[in-house]
Image: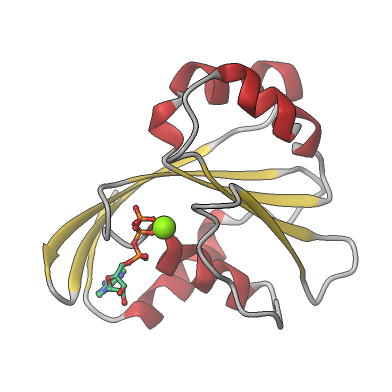
Length: 144
Ligand SMILES: Nc1ncnc2c1ncn2[C@@H]1O[C@H](COP(=O)(O)OP(=O)(O)OP(=O)(O)O)[C@@H](O)[C@H]1O
Ligand SMILES: [Mg+2]
């Protein structure tokens, strides 16, 4: 499935479809170049989940977490851009984050495809891979 998005508000409908509101964990793996809109999309997820805090890019601190309006759910926002080794993901504790309480959004997930795919087996979760591609200043191709 792919869509051309030229208004950021359009992400809300997509998010509603891809977030599974059962008891399972949600892992969204974002792939796309610099400026393709990974953080922007994550901000829309935060909005959808009723996060009150301002969501800022975690590029330098790698992992930020946010309370949502549902006390049972926490949003975890990771950016793997600055990481190069699997052990760094172990140190963050990514595996342990994958549980029913968490919505986990990972920017630059394609840097660690095997590691991230391995979470599916370990935690029996279906990861949603999302690709974002720059089309023009206001438009991105969103594929899933
Ligand atoms: N349709 C769109 N979808 C997403 N972002 C858009 C769109 N149109 C314009 N933009 C703009 O493109 C920029 C995307 O920047 P953003 O920080 O989200 O990218 P990123 O993929 O997270 O980059 P990085 O790899 O540096 O983390 C924002 O300024 C956003 O407002
Ligand atoms: Mg970003």
